[in-house]
Amino acid sequence: MIQYYHINGELTPVAEAQLHVTDLAIMRGYGVFDYFRALGGRALFVEDYVRRFFNSASLLQLEVPCSQEELKERIQTLLDQNGEEKAGIRLILTGGYTTDSYTPVKPNLLILQHLYASYPAEAYERGIKMLTYDYRRELPVAKTINYVTGIRIQKWLKENGADAVLYYDNDTIKESDRSNFFLIDQSGKIITPKEEVLPGITRMKVIEVARELGFTVEERAVKLEEVFEAKEAFMTSSIKGVLPVVSMDGKAIGSGQVGENSRQLGLGFEALVERYIMAKV
Amino acid sequence: MIQYYHINGELTPVAEAQLHVTDLAIMRGYGVFDYFRALGGRALFVEDYVRRFFNSASLLQLEVPCSQEELKERIQTLLDQNGEEKAGIRLILTGGYTTDSYTPVKPNLLILQHLYASYPAEAYERGIKMLTYDYRRELPVAKTINYVTGIRIQKWLKENGADAVLYYDNDTIKESDRSNFFLIDQSGKIITPKEEVLPGITRMKVIEVARELGFTVEERAVKLEEVFEAKEAFMTSSIKGVLPVVSMDGKAIGSGQVGENSRQLGLGFEALVERYIMAKV
Image (cartoon, rainbow over all chains, first blue to last red; front, side):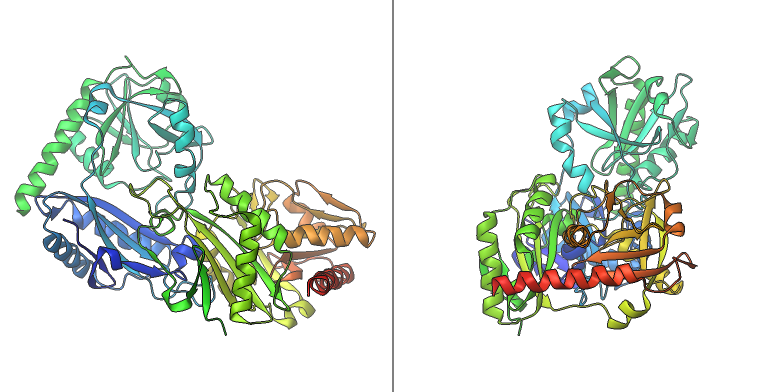
């Protein structure tokens, strides 16, 4: 049972995990976060996520009030205390209790544990449908807490029978609201946007897996039109792993079915996860 | 003394005004707010601010959990209870305690009272210096809590001897981080951006004042180059009123001194404030 969060260095009962309303996340949406899974009671790829969290903080001129090592220890303490084998872990660093309503002060550091989340299994069999949307995330390399556009357009996506969004800016595709995006072109080459996207940990791991499997991977600017000429497409995220995409703006991608390469990459990523957890437990 | 905030319909001692960390403002920066002054124990132009707050909420698909009338009553209750003649009032509406880390639920409504804030008096005598910055606020018509860029660039502004930022996008000027922006051209015409800016209440009042004083006011797209050909410039906000701008990117605007028209508009706005408060008290 999730009984505790870890708030500013203290294990805190979930119900008591509160912030004063002068926190800069509440006043000005100013904060960064990260999210990853735990399996077998161990945080998955935690070194990478913690490193990214520190980098996001630095891009917002916020100082994490402990070392990366100490943060990893606190995460493990929380997992041990709650005693769940599988979980989601969320790190949040806010601008702290501001005195002038604008200037960051001593940040608040929150470690939350969530129920283990997974994307519906049938989505991996049938693939998902996406719609494009003209938007570029602000400060895309930092994982800020700002999801105004992503949350606002959920209703529009549902009304149009879509499962997820693909952001583009000036005819160049970027990413989804909480996932990176990949194409496989007709020659079998794997292509994914490089600049102005979140440096996804699952993205990075899937690129490693793809190269091990012998794929050529190109990280570069990707034009919107390339999506419609692709053989396959998929999204990557901590929760989704490798999730096949079969339609964009109502047009089939490739055969309109889940592609063989996407499936292979999904299995390869799962095997990598398995190896990581086995080595830790 | 500010002893109370008004949280979800209840007068709440300041120290106890907290939100649980699952609030969508903390998790996803999802919320709207508004800010205005109180003078003589009465909220200034409160009808306009409350109307804008409801509009911002609606643009984020959030429902304010009371009527506009009820909200105005709660604001007055808070002012009466704290007993300060002069104050700042902040309304915040968040996405509420989300259960899936993403979907807005029952919003949390906060009414905070701050100390009365004012911009240093000498700034109105010497005028302020601005730097341009390439940025367009996300969903600019809504007053969302997202100030990631505005807060991040404060250090850069200071290091470059500037007092405030002017955002522009594709060579078209927009607004400052917390203020609207106006020019007065060589013919004495007042010009201010119309689209993709916050519909400022002080902006609107100053336009009324300007027209009463016989100025021609144009609300339209404004090119960056027009700034450097202007005779005068000024910013408007709840806290700043009419604040003269004398330099942009290190170049003098007009004479490089506070302009006569800006001064006149500032006095006209102050007189309007005076009339509003006198009618209410």
